[in-house]
Length: 477
Ligand code: NAP
Image (cartoon, rainbow, N blue to C red; front, top):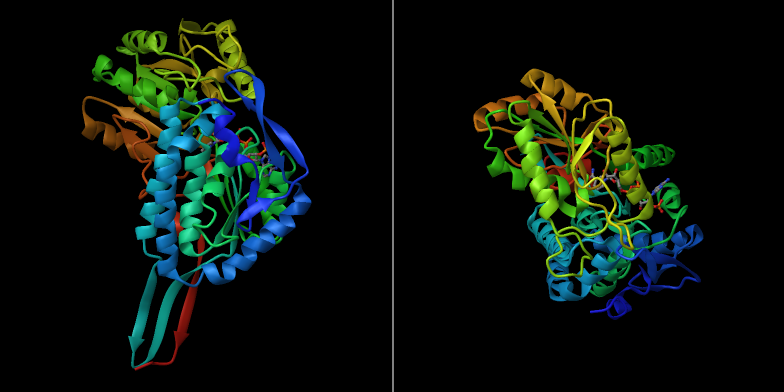
């Protein structure tokens, strides 16, 4: 399939179930070539009025029928599954990830829709007796403004769309300008599955994101992206007291104790750091390895890094694609160069790959320490520092010495011991002998400290798209 074949689906923004007419467009770059390969519609902040009006009108009837909403979510899951073969290449062309990973994102989208279709929106009768009637219900908020990043655009959009719609809200989604097409295509194929105005998708460069926050209609902003932009979103939403959920950056530590079987854990640890080229909020971004096994771990991870096939996402057997965009590619190059110039040793990789596009060698860095930028900052790319430690308690202090607190992991031959250490780590999730083990539709996902406010997924994620209401009165008996 060529890029042109796959784009027929993704021509326009979806507002009120149809194309939103836009005059301007912006170029979308294929990170595997560094060239613009498609145009996406540039929705202006002024046009948001119509989009949010449509979402507001749709809300009035969408919120009413609980069973209808469950059925619509299930139908949407079926539609996505039946069209994944058309959708996945679009994501690969704009994001860079291998086709199998793009396919997985759409599969996850269907899984999330079905999970929420089956979940009840709780109503709790507190009292129903001769003295009175009291019930606590959860009402939808109204219209939701959803803003997503470029690393996992479809799955992360669905973390918002599925619970928001299940609870009875309607939604306007704005993907990143680096990856607008797959989300536009998603909305396009779901026209008719949801009533007009329930699911709307707009794309456009700055200042569209800001306008998504400041617009008076949405009652909630659900944002996934960097901590610096998350702060702006919180400030923008504060003006008219919109509810916010912020899923932000991370610098996730993996602590590897001295009793592990290095060769057994290395492949899983490598995947946890390098999947999607390290461009996952909860990727392992720093490894603290006990000094007794640190050299062998460096060797094992380096062997894997050297053997991994890096190529365009459409090429058979490609495990890693390019970095998604030029600024991120430059950032990874800078951080690796900074580490090496400060004494780090690249035991695998260490350089960009000499070809078009934003390809970088999977890089393992030894002789690194806290205080280096590659350790202290979120690299969000294919470069992993392996830091040595002697004392377990010290490793935990160092893991916690970060403004972030998204996820973490502890790896040990003694899983019970690792589990005892887990609560000492300041993070929203701590996995044992794996990383990111808690990313499931039914478990809460959210960051501590500067990694976020609120959670997504599970009933907790659903509750985030509702407000409590008490209904009380005299006895009905
Ligand atoms: P980003 O630069 O913060 O952008 C995220 C989204 O926010 C984009 O759609 C962007 O659109 C929009 N935006 C920018 N300025 C805005 C503003 N003032 N008001 C409202 N929206 C605005 O993040 P990114 O570079 O796309 O993604 C990488 C970051 O996301 C990393 O830090 C990663 O850790 C984090 N992330 C977190 C999670 C999580 O669940 N915790 C998941 C994935 C990624 P424009 O580009 O048009 O400005």
